[in-house]
Amino acid sequence: MLIIPTEKRFDWKHAPIVLFTIVVLNTIIFFGYQFGDDGKVYEAMISYKQLNFLEKEWPVYREYLQANDEIQRLEQDQELYDNRQNPQSDYWLISNIISDEGFYNHLDANSYNLFTLNFLDKWAISRMEINNKIQSVSSTAYGLTPAKMSVVTLFTAQFLHGSVMHLLGNMFFLIICGFAVEAAIGHLRFLLYYLATGVAGGLLYSLADMSSTIPGLGASGAISGVMAMYLGVFRFKKIEFFYWFFIFVGYFRAPALLILPFYIGKEVYSFFSDTGASIGFMAHAGGFIAGGILMALTYFFQPEVMNEEYIEEDQDSPKVQKDLAKVYDNISKSRFGSAVNGIDAVIKEHGMTFDRAILRFNLLKVLNDPNYTSAMDDLIKMTRLELFEIDKVVRIWEDNADIQEAISIDDLYKFGWNLSTKNHCETAEKIFKQLNALSIKHPSLGMFARKLSVVFGKLNNSDKKQHYDDLATQLLQAQS
Image (cartoon, rainbow, N blue to C red; front, top):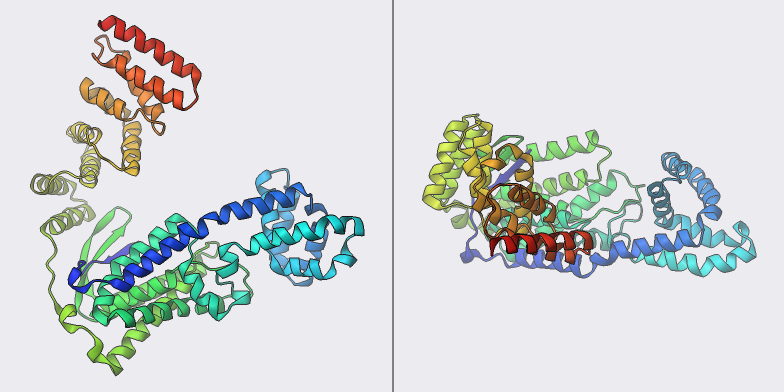
């Protein structure tokens, strides 16, 4: 379930300087510093495997885990060792061993008692280089590892992320809530509270399992704090929220602070129920709690710092947003016919966009309305789409073979032509075959074949390149 506050719109009168700085800093750190982490880990694993260190270290590693009462880890790693014929198990085991700094320190301190001198000469320098490479990975060097938590990592971990999607998700929620909080409490206070809630989230994450050696990464604790601050800014004022629960989507208004216990309860419940997940639920809960406490203290001791004029300012939602809200409300109540009428009215008044075209198509398909063929036509004729939008259109096209024959020859040709790229050449090829099977050929079908020949040439598929070259020649000659 997703609930997002949408009470305030971005306003340049209250430019979120600190918010933008945080977003830019997180982005630069991820793409400028963290992006090489996977390469470092891969190089270390390959070196370890090629040097065949596992056979010598595995018995020592097993004893090390037993001595440290790491029974669960021992069972998991023993299972990986027993299934080493599976390359994935082999690499997971190697990853677990080389990422265990405590085990390396144990090896280093006892190497003369554990290994023969001949092997030690080969092992010492190479193993140190492998360990140094692993320790230079951002999550290991600056992530928040509960077993060796420090003041520094409580802050640095807030600016590291595990993946592009992790970064994008965090920055999305930060922007959604952050600009209103910064406008309400001021730039410096926003920065201090942001960092403080991030630290609080990190502390609760660590206290939940002080023996954990899994690094925590991300701004999730701080962003949870910002979300709590957003609710604290508006307190019991009824504000607008967007919700998405399976097929139910729409907007509702509720007193802001009534949502805070729901957020905290959801994260605590997830922590105890979803034990296998790699999400820092307690970091989220810690950030929420800290954000709520900070806002309560601010209202109690320094209420004058709150920008009440901004908080009370009534920002009417744009008409298109209100119209779409009615559409989503009808969908949530299964009034799909009314939702179709609503989206048609939105498109007529505000214009066609990709998201509106997708929504209209899905609604018409649910209703099994004959017009959903024209809705598909609208989709495939859309231009200037982003790559992910094109991917969506292709998936919809592939999943609805029953209406492909109803598309006009011209529209089918243009769609196939636009898909004649490295990413979608298979779908383009199917469309070409569909057009080529018709008794009346499209006048430009030869050019379509020529373009497919070029695409397959770029993909180094010489057979298909030649095939479409020959077809292009035949079709163009037949038309001349």
